[in-house]
Image (cartoon, rainbow, N blue to C red; front, side):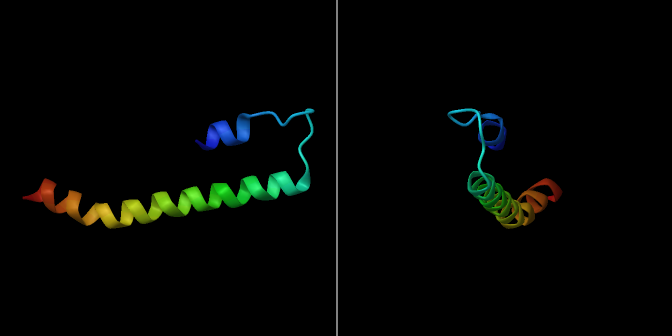
Length: 51
């Protein structure tokens, strides 16, 4: 998802500061969601592997 977000060219070929700021916010949000998912599922997966 992030590769597509950052790899896509803007129409007209130029990327404004506002567009870059938006991409940074989306990137941060995606990373936070992935981290929360990992934190929530890690204990369950570890206990499943151990037992």
